[in-house]
Image 1 (spheres, rainbow, N blue to C red):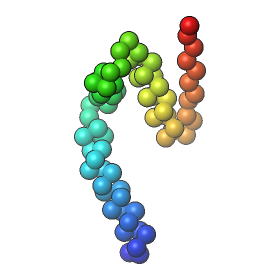
Image 2 (spheres, helix red, strand yellow):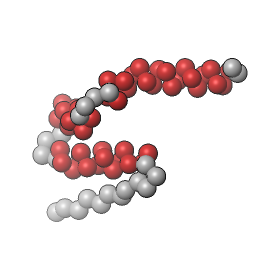
Image 3 (cartoon, rainbow, N blue to C red):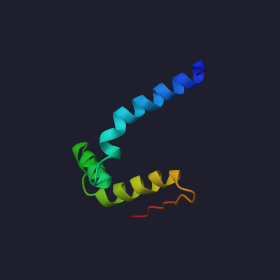
Image 4 (cartoon, rainbow, N blue to C red):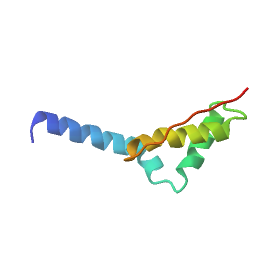
Amino acid sequence: MDFQARQKAAAASEAWEKGKGIAEADDILGLFREEAERHGVVGELDNASIAYLVATSRLFKRPVSLLVKGP
């Protein structure tokens, strides 16, 4: 394995170890909402959750767009 391939494999392994708990969770959106509340999001959990799902859709073949309107 060349140097770049070893670096890429090491980075992927490290990323998996950091994100393993989230990736294996039964309710990822619930975890997101808990973290948002912990960081002070109040009254906008639905909008924050939708924005999270839209951002996650970037990984799909057809990502979705988001427009938030309000007073």
